[in-house]
View 1 (cartoon, one colour):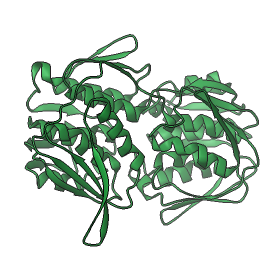
View 2 (cartoon, rainbow, N blue to C red; view 1 turned 30 degrees about the vertical axis):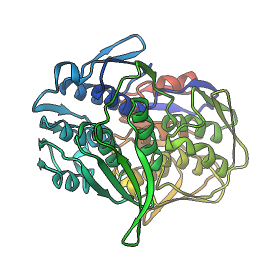
View 3 (cartoon, rainbow, N blue to C red; view 1 turned 90 degrees about the horizontal axis):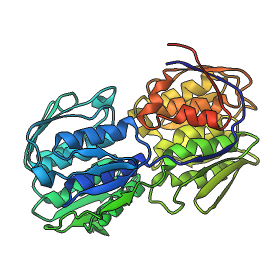
View 4 (cartoon, rainbow, N blue to C red; view 1 turned 120 degrees about the vertical axis):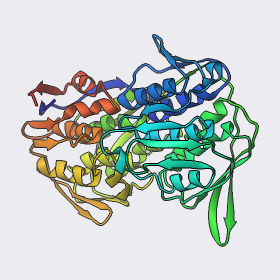
Length: 432
């Protein structure tokens, strides 16, 4: 689906959609606990549905309710053996469920789509193999999982995806032994590991965190004592999503009128809460109060921002940087190459296609702001964040913009274009 967007400022307030990051974690924990759990989650996405679908195949069906899901855990009927799990294009689903399936000991065949097979599983696969798991077809699909994961010590570098650590921690209560996960410092995206620890605590499992040093190397140590069981809290809510709200706050920063999002937790463990500080650094006036976060334009100026711990914010920050005076450097952005697209390149290409000035220097995206973008034709590259970034930019261009493959927003935010229109955005379907 191609969408044509005509320039028109965005203004108003939207409710935050539920956090995809939190939904994955709460669904998995509720599938592994004792007793049924009601999860309030007023909106879903392709990635969330992938986790729901896989948990059902493992023996934990989720009944759709008016407010979200009622999860029946695997403990009711027992986990299913050798299930075929279709994770779609969801890296979170794959990386979280791989250790969980291994700890259940049921075996499984995992399939995925898009660029997911190209996204690395090392060194998680090596750690699983050293603890009794056989993985076949690593780097392609189907990925076949056999064996029963044993507890003990796991070690990961802090530069890899935090999802590897989170997957091991969610699998830990399924193992009989103590589990120790050592992650070398500095730990990228640590906030998302904290989110996992909070989710496990909601289900009664304690993770002890400390700093240790071994052979001169500093590690963050995560320890889960054996014998702990996940217990249902009965009912819980999925909090608002900062990653997607960042695009609306970026729109308020670019344009002449304010855009606000309500239903966000300003003290959330979500790492992308950092959008408030990042936009302020670029010259936005960001205000918060009573769950409402708003952003308005002030004097935008380029800055250097390290995005190694917040890679999903690179796209909305790039939209602001495109019209900020001077140079903005989104530094240490190498992990963007491993997203749904080579997002380092597709952000650059999208901005240039719209009349912006962006280059890549090593692992840095360097943007020289222009007074206004012109519009143009953007290939979303099957990447939801590229499509959303292009739409936000297109609201403030001097001419129309066509986004090719805009349907990819459904991966994380199916209602994005509807909400764009609610804020005054003008969209026209144009085939494709």
